[in-house]
Image (cartoon, rainbow, N blue to C red):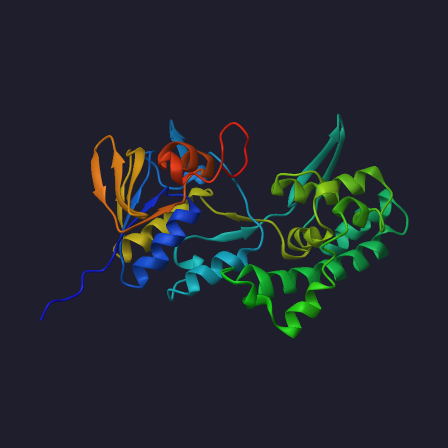
Length: 305
């Protein structure tokens, strides 16, 4: 009796997206190889070591620790199996100018006191602002973020549709936050988190006040030993699941035949593939690795061809 050979999956990029995809697929029995151009695992969260010092090359702390904890829990693991996660206090500093610095305390009451010193009555406004933000966070995470997003039918649920009407999807974040606060300092503090989304507050939906809830109420956390500990933990789990890694291996192109990925071409040779997952830089994969007829965007126009 012949045993069916599992599909060969090649994941391009060993950042968090590539690692999580590789772990999940290997856990389901697929044969997975991760190809990474750098010698280190972690993508933009890799580390640089020099003279006994370790430097985070990208992120250095994170919010929403339950997201990563939930990921590891899927495989009967916990982040505590790999590293210690510590809440920072103060969370971070906001530097407004020379000798004008606000250390954002982990204690909510201490933060309310700091708000009140800057703008009278703002501590009460902060309560109301974060109550809305908490609702958006719970709905956004539980009803939207963890859905695969493969079909609109996933959201055809009375509960979800009703919740969506309260998420401020049409109002800008800039306008929303100004309903509660007037002080330029407080506005800068509260608008800071949405900059991670790659746009200015006036172009971001008010839904993303949920990031303020994550920041202020859920806290800022640091993996002891550096952010690379998280990438290292995912790497260890991937290896445990049987994922193969090829580092220092830059992908040159993806060979596609009859609409199906067949090979990943690298300087070191060819890797046979039934499925290729592009978890590296989107622009690079689309414009430089895919055959031109399969590219989604035009390099010149920046739009779908």
